[in-house]
Image (cartoon, rainbow, N blue to C red; front, top):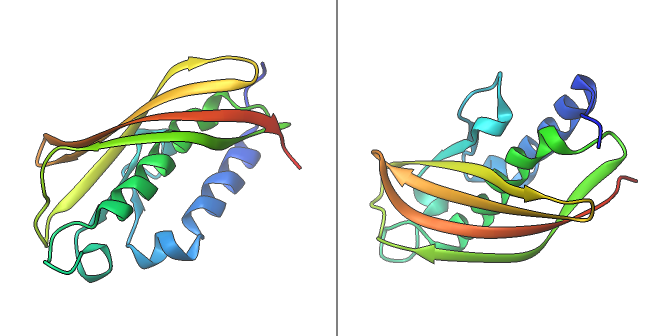
Length: 140
């Protein structure tokens, strides 16, 4: 397994940032110089459910993104990763106006499968955790 070229990583990160849903939710890189450090987003209107707290579907979606960004440095230019399993545990509600930070960790990277963990925190407290399994496929 070779490491990806900086240009390929930059293009892949930009493609993730350009997804309209991610922009709509206000998703940002925690560290633009290190995309694998994770993402954050505000719990404002688009990320809230009908009672004004973080919508569970938003956290599911962005946990997957955090996992993908953590995996990027281990994908060669000829590889891509697609999710085939995602399990998220929501531990507590998140109030409107809060900032949610998400980080991913590669637990194990095989030739064809990668196992990842993602966590969401608010003010340093874990509010959700996920197990993400991605298939490593040839990039098209």
